[in-house]
Image (cartoon, rainbow, N blue to C red; front, side, top):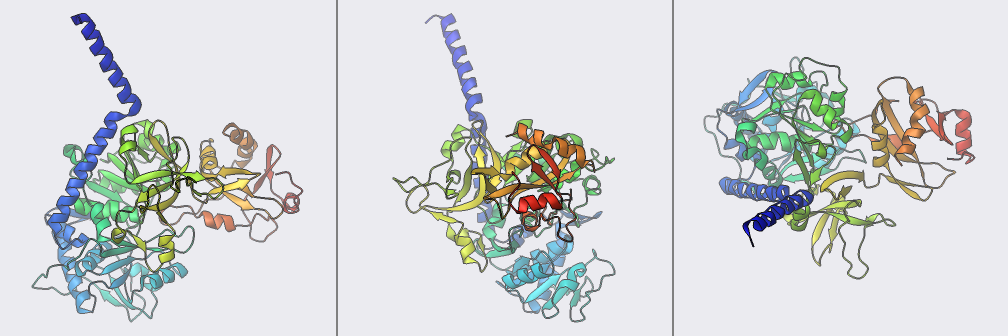
Length: 609
Protein backbone atom coordinates (compact mmCIF):
# COMPACT_ATOMS: atom_id res chain seq x y z
CA UNK A 1 0.00 0.00 0.00
CA UNK A 2 1.41 3.39 -0.98
CA UNK A 3 1.84 6.07 1.72
CA UNK A 4 -1.07 8.15 0.46
CA UNK A 5 -3.45 5.19 0.57
CA UNK A 6 -2.18 4.23 4.02
CA UNK A 7 -2.83 7.73 5.29
CA UNK A 8 -6.36 7.65 3.92
CA UNK A 9 -7.04 4.28 5.54
CA UNK A 10 -5.64 5.55 8.84
CA UNK A 11 -7.75 8.69 8.69
CA UNK A 12 -10.84 6.66 7.88
CA UNK A 13 -10.14 4.33 10.80
CA UNK A 14 -9.72 7.27 13.16
CA UNK A 15 -12.94 8.83 11.91
CA UNK A 16 -14.79 5.53 12.30
CA UNK A 17 -13.38 5.10 15.79
CA UNK A 18 -14.41 8.62 16.78
CA UNK A 19 -17.90 8.02 15.38
CA UNK A 20 -18.32 4.74 17.27
CA UNK A 21 -16.96 6.32 20.44
CA UNK A 22 -19.51 9.14 20.22
CA UNK A 23 -22.34 6.85 19.14
CA UNK A 24 -21.76 4.19 21.80
CA UNK A 25 -20.38 6.48 24.55
CA UNK A 26 -17.34 4.26 24.99
CA UNK A 27 -14.98 6.83 26.54
CA UNK A 28 -17.40 8.02 29.27
CA UNK A 29 -18.15 4.41 30.16
CA UNK A 30 -14.50 3.44 30.47
CA UNK A 31 -13.77 6.55 32.52
CA UNK A 32 -16.60 5.75 34.93
CA UNK A 33 -15.51 2.12 35.25
CA UNK A 34 -12.01 3.30 36.20
CA UNK A 35 -13.51 5.74 38.70
CA UNK A 36 -15.58 2.95 40.22
CA UNK A 37 -12.52 0.72 40.57
CA UNK A 38 -10.51 3.49 42.24
CA UNK A 39 -13.42 4.19 44.61
CA UNK A 40 -13.51 0.50 45.54
CA UNK A 41 -9.81 0.60 46.38
CA UNK A 42 -10.37 3.59 48.67
CA UNK A 43 -13.21 1.71 50.37
CA UNK A 44 -11.00 -1.28 51.11
CA UNK A 45 -8.25 1.00 52.42
CA UNK A 46 -10.73 2.73 54.76
CA UNK A 47 -12.02 -0.61 56.07
CA UNK A 48 -8.46 -1.75 56.79
CA UNK A 49 -7.61 1.51 58.55
CA UNK A 50 -10.65 1.19 60.84
CA UNK A 51 -9.91 -2.41 61.77
CA UNK A 52 -12.42 -3.68 64.33
CA UNK A 53 -13.99 -0.24 64.85
CA UNK A 54 -16.08 0.44 61.73
CA UNK A 55 -18.34 3.18 63.10
CA UNK A 56 -18.86 6.81 62.11
CA UNK A 57 -17.30 7.81 65.44
CA UNK A 58 -14.05 6.15 64.45
CA UNK A 59 -14.10 7.85 61.03
CA UNK A 60 -14.59 11.12 62.91
CA UNK A 61 -11.79 10.22 65.36
CA UNK A 62 -9.26 9.84 62.51
CA UNK A 63 -9.66 13.42 61.25
CA UNK A 64 -7.06 16.09 62.07
CA UNK A 65 -8.54 17.92 65.10
CA UNK A 66 -7.46 21.27 63.63
CA UNK A 67 -9.77 20.89 60.61
CA UNK A 68 -12.95 22.95 60.62
CA UNK A 69 -15.91 20.60 61.12
CA UNK A 70 -19.12 22.61 61.57
CA UNK A 71 -20.54 25.95 60.49
CA UNK A 72 -23.87 26.90 62.04
CA UNK A 73 -25.53 30.31 62.02
CA UNK A 74 -22.23 32.17 61.71
CA UNK A 75 -20.27 30.13 64.26
CA UNK A 76 -17.62 27.49 63.55
CA UNK A 77 -16.17 24.50 65.42
CA UNK A 78 -13.11 22.37 64.67
CA UNK A 79 -13.11 18.58 64.80
CA UNK A 80 -11.09 18.83 68.01
CA UNK A 81 -13.59 21.16 69.68
CA UNK A 82 -16.54 18.93 68.82
CA UNK A 83 -14.60 15.83 69.88
CA UNK A 84 -14.17 17.20 73.41
CA UNK A 85 -17.93 17.66 73.81
CA UNK A 86 -18.63 14.24 72.26
CA UNK A 87 -16.38 12.65 74.89
CA UNK A 88 -18.11 14.55 77.71
CA UNK A 89 -21.60 13.56 76.56
CA UNK A 90 -20.55 9.94 76.00
CA UNK A 91 -19.17 9.73 79.54
CA UNK A 92 -22.40 11.16 80.97
CA UNK A 93 -24.64 8.81 78.97
CA UNK A 94 -22.52 5.78 79.83
CA UNK A 95 -22.69 6.68 83.53
CA UNK A 96 -26.47 6.75 83.14
CA UNK A 97 -26.69 3.25 81.76
CA UNK A 98 -26.41 3.76 77.98
CA UNK A 99 -24.32 0.97 76.48
CA UNK A 100 -23.49 -0.79 73.23
CA UNK A 101 -26.48 -1.97 71.13
CA UNK A 102 -28.99 0.16 73.09
CA UNK A 103 -31.55 1.98 70.96
CA UNK A 104 -31.76 5.64 71.98
CA UNK A 105 -34.52 7.84 70.54
CA UNK A 106 -33.13 11.12 69.18
CA UNK A 107 -35.68 13.88 68.64
CA UNK A 108 -33.43 16.69 67.51
CA UNK A 109 -33.47 19.84 65.41
CA UNK A 110 -30.57 20.45 63.01
CA UNK A 111 -27.82 21.88 65.20
CA UNK A 112 -24.33 21.08 66.51
CA UNK A 113 -26.16 19.36 69.37
CA UNK A 114 -27.67 16.84 66.96
CA UNK A 115 -24.29 15.96 65.45
CA UNK A 116 -22.74 15.64 68.91
CA UNK A 117 -25.50 13.29 70.11
CA UNK A 118 -25.14 11.01 67.07
CA UNK A 119 -21.35 10.83 67.45
CA UNK A 120 -21.50 10.27 71.22
CA UNK A 121 -23.93 7.37 70.77
CA UNK A 122 -21.75 5.98 67.99
CA UNK A 123 -18.75 6.09 70.33
CA UNK A 124 -20.69 4.00 72.85
CA UNK A 125 -21.87 1.57 70.15
CA UNK A 126 -25.50 2.58 70.76
CA UNK A 127 -28.04 3.03 67.95
CA UNK A 128 -29.46 6.52 67.37
CA UNK A 129 -33.12 6.33 66.29
CA UNK A 130 -33.53 9.59 64.37
CA UNK A 131 -37.16 10.46 65.04
CA UNK A 132 -39.37 12.56 62.81
CA UNK A 133 -42.88 13.98 63.05
CA UNK A 134 -45.07 14.82 66.01
CA UNK A 135 -48.17 13.52 67.76
CA UNK A 136 -49.25 10.15 66.32
CA UNK A 137 -46.27 9.87 63.97
CA UNK A 138 -43.82 10.53 66.79
CA UNK A 139 -45.44 7.90 69.00
CA UNK A 140 -45.35 5.39 66.16
CA UNK A 141 -41.64 6.05 65.54
CA UNK A 142 -40.90 5.76 69.26
CA UNK A 143 -42.71 2.44 69.52
CA UNK A 144 -40.94 1.01 66.48
CA UNK A 145 -37.52 2.04 67.84
CA UNK A 146 -38.00 0.10 71.12
CA UNK A 147 -36.10 2.92 72.83
CA UNK A 148 -36.50 3.49 76.56
CA UNK A 149 -34.58 6.79 76.57
CA UNK A 150 -35.08 9.97 74.55
CA UNK A 151 -32.52 12.69 73.87
CA UNK A 152 -34.05 15.89 72.49
CA UNK A 153 -33.18 19.47 71.78
CA UNK A 154 -35.13 21.91 74.01
CA UNK A 155 -37.39 23.14 71.19
CA UNK A 156 -38.85 19.63 70.81
CA UNK A 157 -38.82 18.57 74.46
CA UNK A 158 -42.52 19.32 75.02
CA UNK A 159 -43.54 16.62 72.52
CA UNK A 160 -41.69 13.82 74.32
CA UNK A 161 -43.99 11.58 76.41
CA UNK A 162 -43.63 12.38 80.11
CA UNK A 163 -43.40 8.67 80.92
CA UNK A 164 -40.05 8.25 79.15
CA UNK A 165 -36.58 8.89 80.53
CA UNK A 166 -35.64 12.12 78.82
CA UNK A 167 -32.45 14.15 78.40
CA UNK A 168 -32.53 17.53 76.65
CA UNK A 169 -29.22 18.88 75.30
CA UNK A 170 -28.59 22.61 74.92
CA UNK A 171 -24.99 23.68 74.46
CA UNK A 172 -25.52 27.04 72.76
CA UNK A 173 -28.08 26.75 69.95
CA UNK A 174 -31.33 27.19 71.90
CA UNK A 175 -31.91 30.28 73.99
CA UNK A 176 -34.47 30.63 76.79
CA UNK A 177 -36.22 27.33 76.12
CA UNK A 178 -36.97 25.13 79.11
CA UNK A 179 -37.81 21.43 78.65
CA UNK A 180 -41.27 21.89 80.19
CA UNK A 181 -41.44 18.55 81.99
CA UNK A 182 -39.73 18.85 85.43
CA UNK A 183 -38.53 15.24 85.11
CA UNK A 184 -36.50 16.08 82.00
CA UNK A 185 -32.76 16.35 82.64
CA UNK A 186 -31.34 19.43 80.92
CA UNK A 187 -27.74 18.91 79.79
CA UNK A 188 -25.54 21.95 79.19
CA UNK A 189 -21.87 22.78 78.75
CA UNK A 190 -21.80 23.62 82.46
CA UNK A 191 -23.09 20.34 83.88
CA UNK A 192 -21.54 17.75 81.55
CA UNK A 193 -18.60 15.93 83.16
CA UNK A 194 -14.98 16.75 82.26
CA UNK A 195 -13.22 13.37 82.09
CA UNK A 196 -9.48 13.31 82.71
CA UNK A 197 -9.07 10.05 80.77
CA UNK A 198 -10.47 9.64 77.26
CA UNK A 199 -11.54 6.06 76.66
CA UNK A 200 -11.54 4.54 73.16
CA UNK A 201 -14.80 4.03 71.32
CA UNK A 202 -16.67 0.74 71.31
CA UNK A 203 -15.70 -1.87 68.77
CA UNK A 204 -18.10 -2.09 65.86
CA UNK A 205 -18.49 -4.44 62.90
CA UNK A 206 -19.75 -3.54 59.45
CA UNK A 207 -22.95 -5.49 60.20
CA UNK A 208 -23.76 -3.64 63.44
CA UNK A 209 -26.58 -1.09 63.37
CA UNK A 210 -25.47 2.54 63.39
CA UNK A 211 -28.71 4.55 63.21
CA UNK A 212 -32.40 4.15 62.48
CA UNK A 213 -33.65 6.40 59.67
CA UNK A 214 -37.39 6.48 59.07
CA UNK A 215 -39.06 6.41 55.68
CA UNK A 216 -40.92 9.57 54.66
CA UNK A 217 -44.34 8.14 55.45
CA UNK A 218 -46.03 9.54 52.32
CA UNK A 219 -47.65 6.14 51.67
CA UNK A 220 -48.39 5.05 55.23
CA UNK A 221 -46.76 4.97 58.65
CA UNK A 222 -42.98 5.57 58.57
CA UNK A 223 -40.84 2.43 58.68
CA UNK A 224 -37.51 2.34 60.53
CA UNK A 225 -34.58 1.50 58.27
CA UNK A 226 -31.88 -0.27 60.26
CA UNK A 227 -28.80 1.45 58.81
CA UNK A 228 -25.63 -0.55 59.37
CA UNK A 229 -22.10 0.76 59.78
CA UNK A 230 -21.40 -0.63 56.32
CA UNK A 231 -23.70 1.89 54.62
CA UNK A 232 -22.31 4.80 56.65
CA UNK A 233 -18.83 3.72 55.60
CA UNK A 234 -19.80 3.42 51.92
CA UNK A 235 -21.21 6.94 51.86
CA UNK A 236 -18.13 8.38 53.57
CA UNK A 237 -15.69 7.36 50.81
CA UNK A 238 -14.47 10.29 48.65
CA UNK A 239 -15.89 10.19 45.13
CA UNK A 240 -13.47 9.81 42.23
CA UNK A 241 -14.85 12.97 40.64
CA UNK A 242 -13.65 14.90 43.70
CA UNK A 243 -10.37 13.04 44.20
CA UNK A 244 -9.36 13.38 40.54
CA UNK A 245 -9.51 17.18 40.72
CA UNK A 246 -8.57 18.21 44.27
CA UNK A 247 -7.67 21.76 43.28
CA UNK A 248 -11.27 22.31 42.16
CA UNK A 249 -13.20 20.45 44.85
CA UNK A 250 -11.09 20.72 48.02
CA UNK A 251 -11.23 22.06 50.64
CA UNK A 252 -14.87 20.99 50.59
CA UNK A 253 -17.60 22.90 52.43
CA UNK A 254 -21.09 21.37 52.11
CA UNK A 255 -24.21 23.40 52.93
CA UNK A 256 -27.33 21.48 53.90
CA UNK A 257 -30.68 22.83 55.15
CA UNK A 258 -32.11 19.30 54.99
CA UNK A 259 -32.99 17.56 58.26
CA UNK A 260 -30.23 15.22 59.39
CA UNK A 261 -32.85 12.60 60.21
CA UNK A 262 -33.30 12.24 56.44
CA UNK A 263 -31.02 9.90 54.50
CA UNK A 264 -29.84 12.47 51.94
CA UNK A 265 -28.51 14.79 54.64
CA UNK A 266 -27.23 12.08 56.96
CA UNK A 267 -25.22 10.28 54.29
CA UNK A 268 -24.35 12.98 51.76
CA UNK A 269 -23.77 15.76 54.27
CA UNK A 270 -22.63 14.23 57.57
CA UNK A 271 -21.02 10.93 56.54
CA UNK A 272 -19.36 12.39 53.43
CA UNK A 273 -18.03 15.37 55.40
CA UNK A 274 -16.54 13.00 57.97
CA UNK A 275 -15.04 10.77 55.29
CA UNK A 276 -13.44 13.68 53.45
CA UNK A 277 -12.34 15.47 56.66
CA UNK A 278 -14.28 18.50 55.42
CA UNK A 279 -16.74 21.08 56.73
CA UNK A 280 -20.49 20.63 57.15
CA UNK A 281 -22.41 23.91 56.99
CA UNK A 282 -25.83 23.36 58.55
CA UNK A 283 -29.04 25.33 58.61
CA UNK A 284 -31.59 24.81 61.37
CA UNK A 285 -34.21 24.35 58.66
CA UNK A 286 -34.80 25.24 55.02
CA UNK A 287 -35.59 28.87 54.25
CA UNK A 288 -36.05 30.11 50.69
CA UNK A 289 -35.13 33.69 51.57
CA UNK A 290 -32.11 32.74 53.68
CA UNK A 291 -30.74 29.88 51.58
CA UNK A 292 -28.15 31.64 49.42
CA UNK A 293 -27.28 34.13 52.15
CA UNK A 294 -26.25 31.13 54.25
CA UNK A 295 -24.39 29.63 51.29
CA UNK A 296 -22.51 32.91 50.82
CA UNK A 297 -21.81 33.53 54.52
CA UNK A 298 -20.59 29.98 55.13
CA UNK A 299 -18.30 29.93 52.10
CA UNK A 300 -19.94 26.68 51.00
CA UNK A 301 -18.62 25.13 47.79
CA UNK A 302 -21.39 22.54 47.55
CA UNK A 303 -25.10 22.53 48.35
CA UNK A 304 -27.53 19.67 48.90
CA UNK A 305 -31.08 19.53 47.61
CA UNK A 306 -33.94 17.06 47.63
CA UNK A 307 -37.41 16.91 46.12
CA UNK A 308 -38.90 20.29 45.33
CA UNK A 309 -36.38 22.47 47.18
CA UNK A 310 -34.82 23.79 43.95
CA UNK A 311 -38.25 24.72 42.59
CA UNK A 312 -38.86 26.97 45.59
CA UNK A 313 -35.50 28.63 44.98
CA UNK A 314 -36.08 29.14 41.24
CA UNK A 315 -39.30 31.06 41.92
CA UNK A 316 -37.93 33.04 44.87
CA UNK A 317 -37.61 36.85 44.51
CA UNK A 318 -34.18 38.07 43.31
CA UNK A 319 -31.54 38.45 46.01
CA UNK A 320 -28.06 40.05 46.11
CA UNK A 321 -26.78 36.64 47.22
CA UNK A 322 -27.99 34.78 44.11
CA UNK A 323 -24.52 34.72 42.56
CA UNK A 324 -22.35 36.11 45.37
CA UNK A 325 -21.45 32.64 46.65
CA UNK A 326 -18.60 30.18 46.01
CA UNK A 327 -20.78 27.15 45.32
CA UNK A 328 -19.76 25.10 42.26
CA UNK A 329 -21.77 21.89 42.82
CA UNK A 330 -25.42 21.17 43.65
CA UNK A 331 -25.90 17.56 44.71
CA UNK A 332 -29.09 15.69 45.51
CA UNK A 333 -32.11 13.96 44.05
CA UNK A 334 -35.44 15.01 42.59
CA UNK A 335 -34.40 18.02 40.46
CA UNK A 336 -37.00 18.20 37.69
CA UNK A 337 -35.93 18.64 34.09
CA UNK A 338 -38.09 21.72 33.48
CA UNK A 339 -36.24 23.78 36.11
CA UNK A 340 -32.76 22.18 35.86
CA UNK A 341 -31.19 24.79 33.56
CA UNK A 342 -33.17 27.64 35.14
CA UNK A 343 -31.66 26.75 38.51
CA UNK A 344 -28.11 26.45 37.15
CA UNK A 345 -28.33 29.73 35.24
CA UNK A 346 -29.98 31.85 37.92
CA UNK A 347 -27.58 30.80 40.66
CA UNK A 348 -24.47 30.33 38.46
CA UNK A 349 -23.82 26.78 39.66
CA UNK A 350 -21.92 24.99 36.88
CA UNK A 351 -22.31 21.39 38.05
CA UNK A 352 -25.36 19.36 39.03
CA UNK A 353 -24.91 15.94 40.60
CA UNK A 354 -28.25 14.18 40.52
CA UNK A 355 -28.26 10.76 42.11
CA UNK A 356 -30.87 8.04 42.52
CA UNK A 357 -30.83 6.33 45.92
CA UNK A 358 -33.03 5.41 48.85
CA UNK A 359 -31.99 4.81 52.45
CA UNK A 360 -32.78 1.11 52.31
CA UNK A 361 -32.25 0.61 48.57
CA UNK A 362 -29.36 -1.11 46.80
CA UNK A 363 -30.02 0.11 43.26
CA UNK A 364 -28.29 3.35 42.28
CA UNK A 365 -27.76 5.71 39.38
CA UNK A 366 -25.57 8.81 39.14
CA UNK A 367 -25.73 11.76 36.76
CA UNK A 368 -22.57 13.78 37.29
CA UNK A 369 -21.87 16.41 34.69
CA UNK A 370 -22.00 19.95 33.41
CA UNK A 371 -24.03 19.80 30.18
CA UNK A 372 -27.71 20.40 29.49
CA UNK A 373 -28.11 16.94 27.91
CA UNK A 374 -28.45 15.38 31.34
CA UNK A 375 -31.21 17.70 32.57
CA UNK A 376 -33.89 15.69 34.35
CA UNK A 377 -31.93 12.43 34.08
CA UNK A 378 -30.76 10.29 37.00
CA UNK A 379 -27.88 8.46 35.37
CA UNK A 380 -25.98 7.45 32.26
CA UNK A 381 -24.64 4.16 30.92
CA UNK A 382 -23.51 3.48 27.37
CA UNK A 383 -23.08 0.10 25.73
CA UNK A 384 -19.91 -0.82 27.67
CA UNK A 385 -21.36 -0.14 31.11
CA UNK A 386 -24.61 -1.85 30.21
CA UNK A 387 -22.60 -4.94 29.30
CA UNK A 388 -20.43 -4.75 32.44
CA UNK A 389 -23.25 -3.90 34.89
CA UNK A 390 -23.63 -6.40 37.73
CA UNK A 391 -25.71 -4.66 40.38
CA UNK A 392 -28.50 -2.36 39.10
CA UNK A 393 -30.97 -3.40 36.40
CA UNK A 394 -34.29 -2.32 34.89
CA UNK A 395 -36.65 -5.27 34.48
CA UNK A 396 -39.32 -5.78 31.85
CA UNK A 397 -42.81 -5.49 33.34
CA UNK A 398 -45.92 -7.63 32.95
CA UNK A 399 -48.76 -5.18 32.11
CA UNK A 400 -51.39 -7.50 33.55
CA UNK A 401 -49.83 -8.22 36.95
CA UNK A 402 -47.81 -4.96 37.17
CA UNK A 403 -44.90 -7.13 38.37
CA UNK A 404 -41.60 -8.02 36.66
CA UNK A 405 -42.27 -10.30 33.70
CA UNK A 406 -40.86 -13.83 33.76
CA UNK A 407 -40.11 -15.90 30.68
CA UNK A 408 -42.59 -18.83 30.72
CA UNK A 409 -39.86 -21.18 29.44
CA UNK A 410 -37.05 -20.30 31.86
CA UNK A 411 -38.95 -18.69 34.73
CA UNK A 412 -36.38 -15.90 34.83
CA UNK A 413 -36.85 -12.16 34.45
CA UNK A 414 -35.46 -10.21 31.50
CA UNK A 415 -34.08 -6.70 31.21
CA UNK A 416 -36.36 -4.04 29.79
CA UNK A 417 -35.56 -2.90 26.27
CA UNK A 418 -34.03 0.51 25.69
CA UNK A 419 -36.83 3.08 25.80
CA UNK A 420 -39.17 0.70 27.67
CA UNK A 421 -40.33 1.41 31.25
CA UNK A 422 -39.27 -1.20 33.78
CA UNK A 423 -38.83 -1.66 37.51
CA UNK A 424 -35.43 -0.94 39.02
CA UNK A 425 -33.81 -3.68 41.10
CA UNK A 426 -30.51 -3.88 42.97
CA UNK A 427 -28.49 -7.04 43.58
CA UNK A 428 -28.33 -8.29 47.17
CA UNK A 429 -24.74 -9.44 47.63
CA UNK A 430 -25.06 -10.11 51.36
CA UNK A 431 -28.21 -10.37 53.45
CA UNK A 432 -26.04 -9.63 56.50
CA UNK A 433 -25.33 -6.12 55.14
CA UNK A 434 -28.84 -5.40 53.82
CA UNK A 435 -30.67 -2.41 55.31
CA UNK A 436 -33.83 -3.98 56.73
CA UNK A 437 -36.97 -2.52 58.27
CA UNK A 438 -36.77 -2.87 62.04
CA UNK A 439 -39.46 -5.17 63.46
CA UNK A 440 -41.16 -5.37 60.07
CA UNK A 441 -39.91 -8.52 58.39
CA UNK A 442 -42.85 -8.69 55.99
CA UNK A 443 -42.10 -5.20 54.60
CA UNK A 444 -38.46 -6.18 54.12
CA UNK A 445 -39.26 -9.49 52.45
CA UNK A 446 -41.89 -8.12 50.06
CA UNK A 447 -39.12 -6.13 48.37
CA UNK A 448 -36.90 -9.19 47.85
CA UNK A 449 -36.92 -11.26 44.64
CA UNK A 450 -35.18 -14.58 44.07
CA UNK A 451 -34.17 -16.40 40.88
CA UNK A 452 -34.21 -13.20 38.83
CA UNK A 453 -31.57 -13.97 36.19
CA UNK A 454 -30.35 -17.33 37.48
CA UNK A 455 -31.20 -19.87 40.15
CA UNK A 456 -30.37 -18.68 43.64
CA UNK A 457 -29.68 -15.01 42.92
CA UNK A 458 -31.32 -12.33 45.03
CA UNK A 459 -32.45 -8.79 44.18
CA UNK A 460 -34.25 -5.96 45.94
CA UNK A 461 -37.15 -4.17 44.24
CA UNK A 462 -37.08 -0.37 44.39
CA UNK A 463 -40.72 0.26 43.50
CA UNK A 464 -39.77 2.77 40.78
CA UNK A 465 -40.21 2.58 37.02
CA UNK A 466 -37.24 3.84 35.00
CA UNK A 467 -36.46 4.13 31.31
CA UNK A 468 -32.99 3.59 29.86
CA UNK A 469 -33.06 5.61 26.64
CA UNK A 470 -31.13 4.53 23.51
CA UNK A 471 -28.94 7.61 24.04
CA UNK A 472 -27.63 6.06 27.27
CA UNK A 473 -29.45 8.39 29.65
CA UNK A 474 -31.58 6.91 32.43
CA UNK A 475 -34.70 8.78 33.52
CA UNK A 476 -37.36 8.36 36.16
CA UNK A 477 -40.71 7.33 34.69
CA UNK A 478 -43.11 6.70 37.56
CA UNK A 479 -43.50 5.37 41.04
CA UNK A 480 -45.01 1.89 41.11
CA UNK A 481 -48.66 2.34 41.95
CA UNK A 482 -48.75 5.82 40.42
CA UNK A 483 -50.04 4.39 37.15
CA UNK A 484 -53.83 4.31 37.03
CA UNK A 485 -56.21 2.73 34.52
CA UNK A 486 -58.93 4.70 32.70
CA UNK A 487 -61.08 3.50 29.79
CA UNK A 488 -58.90 0.41 29.41
CA UNK A 489 -55.66 2.37 29.13
CA UNK A 490 -52.82 2.68 31.61
CA UNK A 491 -52.12 6.34 32.43
CA UNK A 492 -48.73 7.38 33.78
CA UNK A 493 -49.20 9.99 36.51
CA UNK A 494 -45.58 11.01 36.05
CA UNK A 495 -45.94 11.66 32.32
CA UNK A 496 -49.10 13.74 32.78
CA UNK A 497 -47.41 15.67 35.57
CA UNK A 498 -44.40 16.41 33.35
CA UNK A 499 -46.72 17.67 30.60
CA UNK A 500 -48.50 19.97 33.04
CA UNK A 501 -45.20 21.30 34.39
CA UNK A 502 -44.20 22.52 30.91
CA UNK A 503 -47.27 24.76 30.58
CA UNK A 504 -46.47 28.44 31.27
CA UNK A 505 -47.70 29.56 34.66
CA UNK A 506 -47.50 26.17 36.38
CA UNK A 507 -45.30 26.17 39.45
CA UNK A 508 -46.04 22.62 40.54
CA UNK A 509 -48.47 19.77 40.02
CA UNK A 510 -49.39 16.41 41.49
CA UNK A 511 -51.31 13.90 39.35
CA UNK A 512 -53.21 10.90 40.67
CA UNK A 513 -56.20 8.65 39.94
CA UNK A 514 -59.60 9.05 41.63
CA UNK A 515 -62.15 6.26 41.91
CA UNK A 516 -65.67 7.40 40.97
CA UNK A 517 -68.51 5.11 42.01
CA UNK A 518 -70.36 5.17 38.68
CA UNK A 519 -67.33 4.65 36.41
CA UNK A 520 -64.83 1.88 35.80
CA UNK A 521 -61.19 2.59 36.51
CA UNK A 522 -59.83 5.82 37.97
CA UNK A 523 -60.36 9.29 36.55
CA UNK A 524 -57.26 11.42 36.25
CA UNK A 525 -57.01 14.27 38.78
CA UNK A 526 -54.39 16.95 39.36
CA UNK A 527 -53.63 19.46 42.09
CA UNK A 528 -51.95 22.44 40.41
CA UNK A 529 -50.16 25.45 41.86
CA UNK A 530 -50.14 28.50 39.54
CA UNK A 531 -47.83 31.49 39.70
CA UNK A 532 -50.86 33.81 39.86
CA UNK A 533 -54.57 33.73 40.63
CA UNK A 534 -55.47 33.85 36.94
CA UNK A 535 -56.83 30.32 36.84
CA UNK A 536 -59.51 31.23 34.28
CA UNK A 537 -57.17 31.77 31.27
CA UNK A 538 -55.09 28.79 32.35
CA UNK A 539 -58.08 26.45 32.49
CA UNK A 540 -59.37 27.72 29.13
CA UNK A 541 -56.17 26.56 27.44
CA UNK A 542 -55.50 23.46 29.50
CA UNK A 543 -57.31 20.98 27.25
CA UNK A 544 -55.38 22.03 24.14
CA UNK A 545 -52.10 22.02 26.04
CA UNK A 546 -52.65 18.49 27.31
CA UNK A 547 -53.92 17.34 23.93
CA UNK A 548 -50.57 18.34 22.35
CA UNK A 549 -48.60 16.03 24.62
CA UNK A 550 -50.54 12.80 24.30
CA UNK A 551 -54.89 25.92 43.39
CA UNK A 552 -54.00 25.26 46.36
CA UNK A 553 -50.45 24.83 47.57
CA UNK A 554 -49.38 21.19 47.51
CA UNK A 555 -48.34 19.93 50.92
CA UNK A 556 -44.81 18.55 51.27
CA UNK A 557 -43.29 16.88 54.30
CA UNK A 558 -39.95 17.81 55.88
CA UNK A 559 -38.12 15.94 53.13
CA UNK A 560 -39.94 17.83 50.35
CA UNK A 561 -41.95 14.82 49.17
CA UNK A 562 -45.53 15.32 48.05
CA UNK A 563 -48.18 13.74 50.25
CA UNK A 564 -50.11 12.24 47.32
CA UNK A 565 -51.95 9.90 49.67
CA UNK A 566 -53.60 12.87 51.37
CA UNK A 567 -54.78 14.23 48.01
CA UNK A 568 -56.29 10.88 47.04
CA UNK A 569 -58.32 10.91 50.28
CA UNK A 570 -59.73 14.38 49.55
CA UNK A 571 -63.32 14.45 48.39
CA UNK A 572 -64.35 15.93 45.03
CA UNK A 573 -67.89 16.43 46.29
CA UNK A 574 -68.29 20.22 46.19
CA UNK A 575 -71.35 19.95 48.42
CA UNK A 576 -69.31 18.72 51.37
CA UNK A 577 -68.65 21.25 54.11
CA UNK A 578 -65.07 22.50 54.24
CA UNK A 579 -64.24 21.75 50.61
CA UNK A 580 -62.64 25.09 49.69
CA UNK A 581 -60.43 23.99 46.79
CA UNK A 582 -61.02 25.35 43.29
CA UNK A 583 -62.22 22.29 41.37
CA UNK A 584 -62.61 21.84 37.61
CA UNK A 585 -63.77 18.97 35.44
CA UNK A 586 -63.33 18.17 31.74
CA UNK A 587 -66.73 18.44 30.04
CA UNK A 588 -66.00 17.18 26.56
CA UNK A 589 -63.20 19.47 25.37
CA UNK A 590 -63.47 22.24 27.94
CA UNK A 591 -62.59 22.47 31.62
CA UNK A 592 -65.47 23.95 33.63
CA UNK A 593 -65.80 24.83 37.34
CA UNK A 594 -67.13 21.84 39.26
CA UNK A 595 -70.39 22.90 40.93
CA UNK A 596 -73.17 21.00 42.65
CA UNK A 597 -75.08 20.33 39.44
CA UNK A 598 -72.12 19.00 37.49
CA UNK A 599 -71.04 16.88 40.46
CA UNK A 600 -74.51 15.34 40.49
CA UNK A 601 -74.16 14.27 36.84
CA UNK A 602 -70.76 12.72 37.62
CA UNK A 603 -71.99 11.01 40.77
CA UNK A 604 -74.89 9.39 38.91
CA UNK A 605 -72.76 8.36 35.94
CA UNK A 606 -74.47 10.70 33.44
CA UNK A 607 -71.36 12.76 32.65
CA UNK A 608 -69.27 11.77 29.63
CA UNK A 609 -65.83 11.65 31.24
